Image (tube, rainbow, N blue to C red; front, top):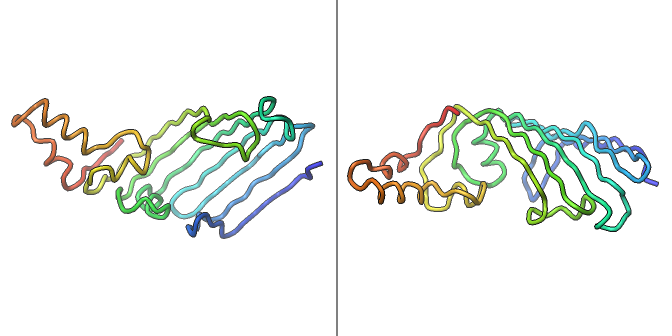
Length: 174
């Protein structure tokens, strides 16, 4: 069977990006694999995680993975830049809490089939100058701030020019 494993990598890289120090404990329990005390940390953020891969070695229809993650963000802008999203945010600190669940094994993870909840609480930062599609196409793929400004300009005409508000970036405190 799978042995108890304590893994530590002092310089963890993904696609030529150093993500920091990575550590995790993997402990089998019957057919399940317990993922405990997981941590990925650098100067910009510390991500802690735990999870269970239920029914290791079973068919995908009989197995599932549950994951919980908590990130303490010290510098959101530097973190995004290090992950190759570009310089789209300056500073920003806070937390991100996530739960993920998917059917199958660890290697079967797909954003298309995973169920997730995400709570983001980032404050004291600034979205930098917005170009069409630059922020959320890469970051979340959900909202495009430039499109929002165009809609607001259409709805409010000359009364309020939201394009001016976003043209040089904008600060956020929560």
